[in-house]
Image (cartoon, rainbow, N blue to C red):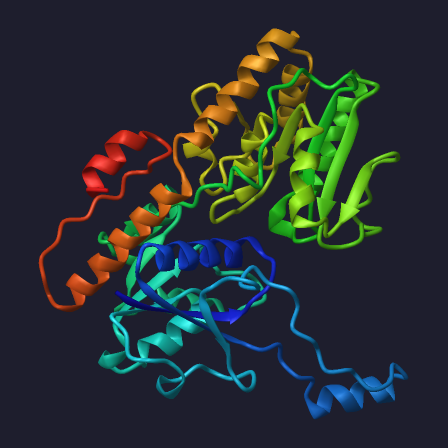
Length: 385
């Protein structure tokens, strides 16, 4: 197939990583893959004047940041300026894939020659900083939806009336995220990904850590994130914290921990869960994103959202396990994520793209949205991959 991915500005975020891996692996499976994205927006004259009047000087034009598409063999075009992507910008193809709500609006307007239209959805993007009515409207566009977790499949049906949604959950790169079998840490250690974004729930995780530290006085915190700690969301004293760690170093932070916390109020998927488990670190998570699918069968503990007390008790439970029981939990976490590979995930995504093409030609094709994290063998059999 000839496949086009339409992206917003690319970067080192988790969602961009997932698209880049699918694009590269589809290319390796023999497909012709083209990626198009936006440059960073230039400051407007109004913003420049405002900056000068406030004494901050002239705003330098932004430079494109590193992204997960750097050094890939996939053809990637960044258009001339920050604007909607149009027909003239993309080649004719078999299928064209929107990857963000704005790109869905653009793809919906493309001519049929640009390919069957698909919409890869990694979250319910009704955030407070976007026009929520427009975001919701994209779920009703005549684009075949492909998503990454069971809750988004169910949301598509219950809220938007679409029962023909493909499920292609991501996996984890076990060459990048791995750890040898190990014992518990000599000092009980908890890990988090630090973010000031409200729905990421860092405030809940820090409160849970504080409560657990009252029962485990030498409890230590390891964290990494993209921003400096905020005075409104301070890290405990003696926290080991790193900003924007090198991608090949992240596994070291997961591996230093007895347990990893994900306290999110909302997630599309929750990639840190997979990354931590691939590094043999059990997870405590709220039921956000794909956590109910992944943190099951003795691989970690699910706790209620907005409940730092319950999360603190879970921290105490795991950190106070005998070493042999902790090792069993660690190995179960590792085994869970290794039962479903990126090759499996790409096969699911490929099936979803073929469904989009058949759907555009009004062919009647059955679709099954069974999460491979619940039952990998059954999901592959039903999807025919």
